[in-house]
Length: 614
Image 1 (cartoon, rainbow, N blue to C red):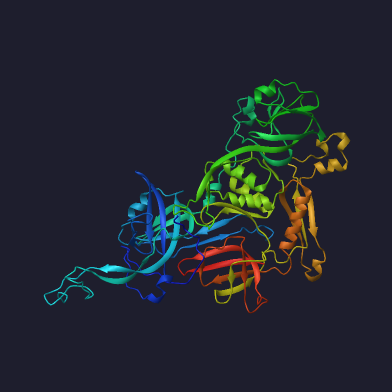
Image 2 (cartoon, rainbow, N blue to C red):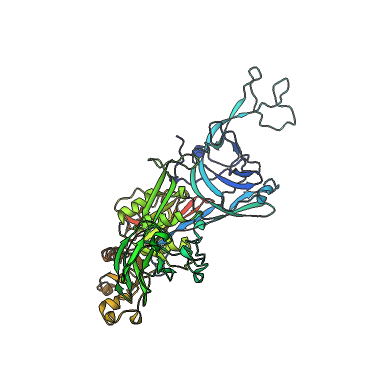
């Protein structure tokens, strides 16, 4: 199997200069270090009249070998190496971190002084795949053509050349050592992302990039009520988005579809169950569930004071018109997601077309853990390629954080998929988004691990600086919201028996709260404050309390934030990974383990900058 390994530490080196035809120009390069020299190739998909075409553009020009992928292909050396990109865990309003991962890219720049690439600017490129790969230049023997010679076997006067000749009796060509790419198949993938647009000047063509997460900036719900009656609702609902409910959600207001039949929609599609319905805060009797949809539910006789559910259609029915606010507790959407799963092999490699082993995977069905809920959300949109989901990372997250959650987009909501994912991850202390290979991953931001394979010491770093913590001082208390009520009910919404009671007061509060803290932190840090309420999707108090305690420990006094600039180019470290920093000052002599919060790569100078916390 040909594999493309995520690159690890690559030593500092200079690329050979190239002209617009891709030939390696004479350049002062230490041949003793030739295996340390690097090349970069941009693989760009574009669209024209003939369909999708794939182009290859390198910092060095060469023709691939017959056994390379692609074989026998000329790669022009027009690519400029000054490419940079940054990936970071978002910083939240309280100065801590979590949410949908943000990425920014510099432009991919092609030298084009003679206009050879002008036609590219006329090809559609938005939303097309762009892959940047890097490999080593190695010394290889290159045939040197025989020069014209006279009878005395000396070069003919006036002929340009080096004076090197071949053996005229055998026709053998002399050999010369040259730095050439080892192979394209063995070149590591630095990142894969999407193109946005072309820009150009007289001498350059620039490809503007966008992140894969741009595909998430679409409406979570695209289905709307038609307002034509029945399951499409009355005219007043026309054009409103249909309601979506995930996991264990509480006090969800159902949507009235038919006033005469008293049929309500709980979720746009199948659900697991409606566990409770309350009218003015008073529980109705659960009349059970039936098979089928609208017609079957319309034919059912519902006892007064009860409700009946048709889970397959996500609808329920009452016996009579309610006399006040109506809410229900739901175990929400059942949604099958079928996609072709792509994963690396055990050694971390992928085939050269960026695929590993794959299989059709169905699920998650009903989901109430964060990973499963996000898979359901991603499965709703045609804009995200579901084959590019790192399912292992979702399963690992749900194994490490199995807490049941609940979330809803109520009727009329215009929330985007990106905002929904971002909000859920912030509440759970998670980070999610495409990795550098375009695969969607899910992780939790944890405290630094005890063991780490990546060490940065003075030999491998250019500089280290401590920077201010965005939250300044560690909070002395964390408050995590749980069991959100999607519709609150004040005294005027409740039956008289509930007014002024603890149960009635609870129904008026949007969030239940779990608190973890220690006021004695203020002794050493008098400016420490209590953290703001974290709007988390937890369904159970114990899980919210555990998250409060976890954040109290994660953002403890003594944690620091460092900016680290390395001597090497690193693409192996991922956001959330633990690295060890060793320095002979600042209490780092024995090494401190820290979590990676951002990674910036500068291909022009072969440097990496990391923001680490610990």
